[in-house]
Amino acid sequence: MTEQRGVTVWFTGLSGAGKTTIRMAVEEKLRAASLKVEVLDGDVVRENLTKGLGFSKADRDENIRRIGFVSHLLTRNGVIVLVSAISPYRDVRQQVREQIGNFVEVFVNAPLEVCERRDVKGLYRRARAGEIKHFTGIDDPYEPPDHAEVECRTDLETLDESATKVLQSLVNQGYIRHSAG
Ligand code: ADP
Image (cartoon, rainbow, N blue to C red; front, side):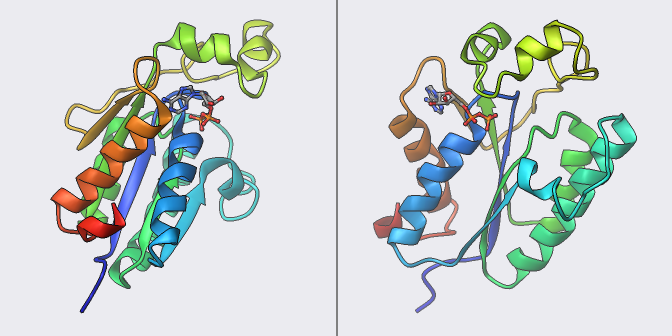
């Protein structure tokens, strides 16, 4: 009996919104249930698969298309792919959604002020100081999803609540069995 169907879970949101944190919590649960999981983390991918790309719209879109391509290959082989990438542009997110098919978009949403206060990597401070240009939310756009399958308001809910929402969505859509969620 198949315990999982291939799917890409796509975490989008501002830097510091909580994409990586929720992704890790979801990953832990899925692995504990012995499911096949792969992770494409935006920061990691930019060190290899998409090394050399910058932060213009064209380069950001190319970054997402490459992540989407690999996600597509894995998804069609039955893997649960967890992608965390700011992915600020709606049109290219829609493109990868159509390419992959089995796609769950998770809008990891916290107000800019909250993300900036967290400043997990110290990047907002540097962006405000003008040391980083084209920083999403400061001097570069972020287009929120219109129809994300899941929205996690990380300023209002606990990590556990956020992760549970994502897992429950996978159960509801028949990608995993209840026991894994
Ligand atoms: P991103 O990957 O989106 O850049 P991170 O996951 O690296 O963001 O950082 C998010 C920060 O917000 C972490 O320090 C995390 O502990 C904190 N946080 C607070 N509440 C939540 C929540 N409900 N879900 C996820 N992260 C949260």
